[in-house]
Length: 175
Image (cartoon, rainbow, N blue to C red):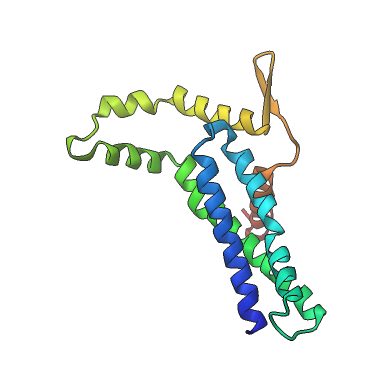
């Protein structure tokens, strides 16, 4: 079998395992634990392509030099990481944090009888939305509360990566 096929297969199988673990664990977690669990799951699955490729190497799945297996392993890990990143950025993030998506889910759950405007306002007023977000940030450790004031809990976290990327893009664009 081609090393290219083995590389892509290892990456996609690892990503499939990530999705399975993600779906299973998120059924039991409280909303404030979601981000921490997601980061832990991504980190735990990150090395799986390397383990899979090492197993294939030792099982002699192909007659390739060890250097090729090493490069293929790194590539499989990168593909798996990119798949996880795209999933978090484009699927999980909007589904979990978008008010628009939550409103659509609430309305869809109303089925034929629908949902009243008053019910939606009761569930999505400013206080509720801020409280939900604060609980998530507190649960993940990104912010801390002391004496009734909120502060940044960690100087480096998942969100600062996006902030740094946006800062670089703003400099390049000139806005």
